[in-house]
Length: 592
Image 1 (cartoon, rainbow, N blue to C red):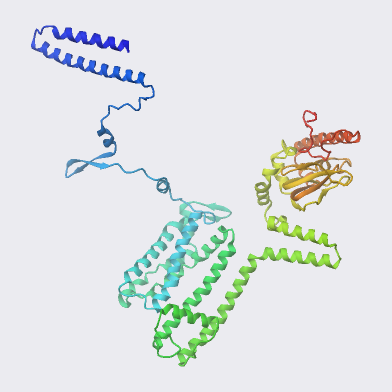
Image 2: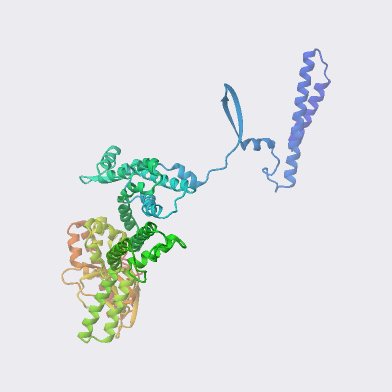
């Protein structure tokens, strides 16, 4: 601040000296005036900055951002405006428009979307949504053409609305033919074809293309002679293949496809009643509304009352007035025959849909009933029967099936391996025994694992038994027990651990179990058989050497703990061949 004050003082003195000099010429006088004004401006700026520095030293909390800026308010307003230069009638014209607001993220993502050059009809959800729109347009024609033909709902006042809906559906048909169908991928000689020209030519050779073209045949040209008659739109019904394709895609996408099947079957029944209601109103109008007791009398809502008649007729409820004319008798006879035939078909389809939805549960019930019958015939003790029934209930509730292998055996080996990797690899990869082994060997091993559920208190293995399996805990806990009554719990093994590997990897008869292990609560274990592991290790010699070395270390640890047990020392855990339980380091060979 002192230096700034000195600088300002020197400038003031120079200004005074300069102003006191004479003016030898007019040019010099003008120049002196300009210089003097400039120096005065500099003095004013320096004084202002000095005052600002003094204020900041007095109040250090004031930040530089809070000080007033030199920019005028007009600049902010200028930033909010956009100037556009255009040429109008050969003359340049400037337009000042307000700056548009920032674009939302969802709108930006929509504008950034690019339509794909090829579409996978089996996995693309956008295509499934498009099929929904096409099916909606098809259903508009299927349901509304009979209504507009039979009932007097299409009038001169609302005709423009009906035509707008009709041509909107036609526009969807045209987009489907020109945009979506020529972009569908297909398989040729085992290869997925994605070329635009090949996809377009393939679509034009299919039966689907012929039906799509027929569905757009312009029968509306006859409106000029007959007026707007909805029956002239019947070619739109030929696009029925899209309905079948939509059903297949919906069943593949939905987790519980049987729900959609029930809804679809119910819609078949409702549509048959819908057609019958339209025909009944047409017959009543032909005979004359209210002319007999059998026909519709013209009172109330026409569609609801005719639909009620159709329900009582097709489902053969009865209670209808007797037909009097020949036309009424023939109409009613046809109604009864079609009703019995159609209703029986609907009941059969509904039974098949419900049966398919509950097939797994029915199989579970059948197995449980057969097992209960078997146990009763051989007088199995009641507590054993209860445990077996508990196993059935828990296995079904936890897995949704009794044996996972029955489901996977139908798939190719590669798909079985992919499913096994997705389900079990996250658990097996954490097992220290298999760390360092060939990754593909672990993948092959996953396909050989079998899931088994143990009930609370069930013994997984007992000391002295011949060990032929290794166990990986997928869910739940097991306990290592001992003592005279096997009531002493030495350690609890949790999910992700492995035990029984000593018996699995040992050779030369050293495959006896070294401890008692029982389930603590419900335990879901994955079992690997010794024979299956041997078949896998034949193809992976390096992994076989590594596992043999680990088995040798584990066996030495087991002998170490056995000696401690015989000498009656303070034993923390028994030797059961489980690297996740031992208080012993495999690599340092030191007790932890």
